[in-house]
Image (tube, rainbow, N blue to C red):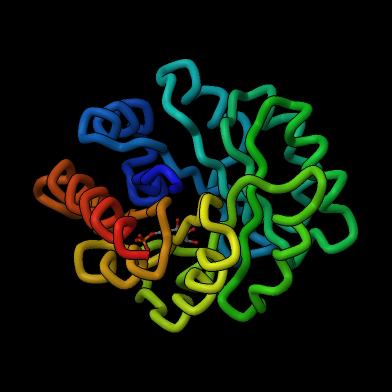
Length: 225
Ligand SMILES: O=C(CO)[C@@H](O)[C@H](O)COP(=O)(O)O
């Protein structure tokens, strides 16, 4: 069984107070901190890069789950490894020719490799990466178009999660976009165990309560599939 991981998306935090926001999320029960790295090219938004991860690393020991929404992920491996990133999840759409090299480099730099796919990308495209001799260790199924927080969850993406869970019982399957108390049932019952949640956590009067509810829902669902 895959371990439940609740990962608040720091994209919804107050970037001017990133260190204290990170500490607050850890105090509220976050397992991972989800860091959205966007290059303004792969997606129409620009966020943070290795220098910010390096600064944040000085203030927290938390697992920094980096999601690379960038056109050239290979360029980010060395700087992010040095900066102290924990997970490095790249997009399959831009890595068709070099994913083996990417996975190799990510591991070499001490990070955990993951692959992500946009809503329009068929799930079959990630199978070779999970089944490789040197495989990715997580698949991140996007449940919104990547680029911005606060969008509506796409329930039709749950077919992808179900397919993955059936094929790979112990794989880390992460979902990202529009997750919160009203959508977690669908994601958890489909088989997701890593839950990224931005606005539902940061916008809640009691983020700890939301994080706890997300975790309990994942735990309860795991006994049923
Ligand atoms: O990667 C992304 C958006 O591209 C996400 O991580 C969002 O930041 C999630 O935010 P919510 O949909 O939970 O508000």
